[in-house]
Image (tube, rainbow, N blue to C red; front, side, top):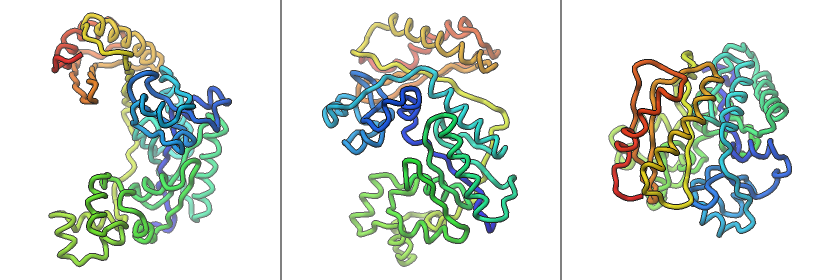
Amino acid sequence: MPAVPTIAHLDADAFFVSVEQAIEPSLRGKKVAVGGLTRGIISSASYEARACGVYTPMPTARARVVCPDLILLPHRAGAYGRVSRKLFDICETVTPVVERRSIDEGFIDLGPCGHKALAQAVAAVKKLQRRIWDELGITVSFGLASNKLVAGVASKLNKPRGFTVVEPGDEAGFFAGLKIGRLPGFGPKTEAALNKQGLHLVSDLLDLPDARKAAVLGREWRATVDYLRGIDDSAVEADESDAKSYSTQETFGGDIGDRERIERELKRMIDELMPKIRADGKRARTITIKVRYPGMQDSTAAHTIPEASDLETAFYPQVAPLMKAAWRQRRP
């Protein structure tokens, strides 16, 4: 095990809202959320709004009830993707090994930087955290550890603008005192079931006799025990192909059953996306359409064209058949 932690996990704080606040600083410190204005769900909420009871993915109508003075903003087309690209571009000035996990989350490997002491690694990440704020006006939280699993958990503990360091050798002790639900893979239902058995902390699971561990954790209990001790050998995987996906979505003010209208909306969405693809010097081959019904069930359909293109007309003919394939229910 290295003497210096080299894996950092970056987790942007309330990313969509943070971008909106960077664009309009007067929103800072206020109860702000991004989502559907009249329907749909909350995609991002400021920490002031969260303190009022707003969370993701809470329905917008419910958010307005629990927080009547909530400032609700629509999604700003293109802005979040642009800031995300700048965010990870900044990370790549520190190390070439950057794994972009999502629009607002990723890993960096400081190994190539050759830091010989903990203080050097800590200073490098803190400098990166300050630079992101100075250049983009958004706050991010970091976890610094010897592996991806521990770094990913650490980054979420002291948000916003958090920075948690787990030194090599301290992984098991760090995990032991955490609530079970803090670990990826232990969702609310699993955590509630374990709580009913008197198991609340990671240490509660680790202290069980082996026979009980097997009964509680299942057939792969030994591998799960390693996981609970913070053991992880997965590498940070930089995206060598520079492949990207581009997307947009629309939540309508009322239920729509007119397929021709929806097909027009889909073509409008293509008109929004293709200029972004051209601006990045990219071409696309696969188009995916997702339909979300009022009960939050999703249905998707996709098609890959023979040759990649950056022209709207290459994808227009796919809209009608894909819409027909994706719309599998008779409901609007």
